[in-house]
Image 1 (cartoon, rainbow, N blue to C red):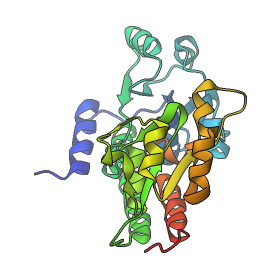
Image 2: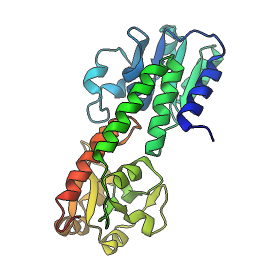
Image 3: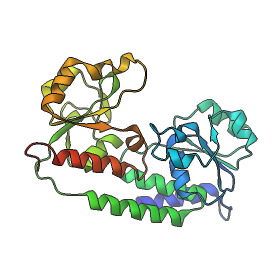
Image 4: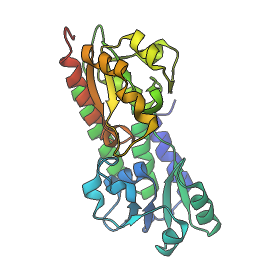
Length: 276
């Protein structure tokens, strides 16, 4: 069986075509592809990143992203940049992607990572698209070294829940679930049959009685979807269980920045009473 990273690189090179030069005018229109492109692009190769890349709440590289002009994913503005490659996410502005392709501009969509193995794959994929395979391989090596430094055997892992707006709980077959597992926790969502994730009623969460609840920070303004996060029953659960923050910038994208999320959770685990 071929190694997954080699397979991704081979596929990327096949898409580029034999002997085809690396793109020189690249535009990214997705938060996650923004960050991968910023990490791997050669000087002058990346023309623009999405405006979300400059948002410190959403982006782990908001300060770095200020070095590039921001786009809003509109076909008209991207067309005027005259790119020879546009990189998008699977769910990025589909009308924009479709229009750009009709205009003859190459667009590659990258699927979001749902595991730590897929973090490696996305790094390799972006490296292949940009003709920066060596830089990608080095970044994967750094990622693996960082992950190895955080890894430790937990004989009896404490139970944790990732609980977000609308009562959504992330399961083990998600990137958030992979972060939780790498930090040495068992995921209570798996106990109720949630694989990727789904709505977990608050009553059920309380009865599951996890050792740790991972909660997002409320966004500015008011949102009915976030009302469950201030429910008295959840507040009571937090008083007897540990809590840890779910920071979007470190959790949402499959980049090496997930190591910060793992490190934060590992520290929270060590602070639990009678933690392994």
